Image (cartoon, rainbow, N blue to C red):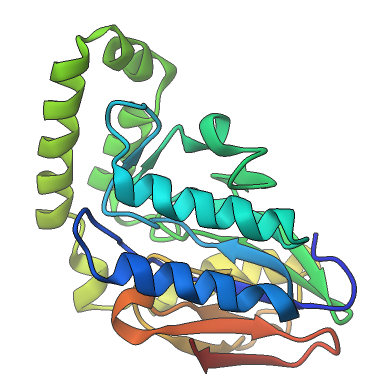
Length: 244
């Protein structure tokens, strides 16, 4: 939960990669957040691929994780919503880069508002092929098999996975599934939340709920690297998308 006195900030898909000049830009952005922010929620897919194995994590992973650990030491709480490009990072980085993390969503409270936040890759129930692949890829059995592979094989597998992900699961970029997003959000509003925050779709949206849904606000985060924009909720409850 966000603490008193500071802003609650949400950042969407950043998709940093090895050798990416945006790594330093994002580290500067994170550092600049610290004075006025009490809680930072990263909405998943911070990197092109993030697999929590030391031999796979590169200098760009470590540089950003260190900066997040640094702002935590300055009193900023950091949460991570695991996305479709994140694999088992919670256990490796909780307590250092993050205070908490979740694949199934977090509830944040700020300015008298209850906000449900989740990465968003499971919002579209019509994407059955992706949902099936996700169940297998994130299963305990798959992780045990992966860890049993030689280190060099794990590194090669991670490279192939990154290449595959760059070619697949792009339908959300062509057409925003508004009906699916509204159905998902309406269920959260019926649970008593005032707003829903989603990443994953790479497009900035600020939508009001429509009847018969209970009242609420749907906030879809833009991808950070291209837009340099983020969502900020002030202690008084004011919500706005802002340039980073």
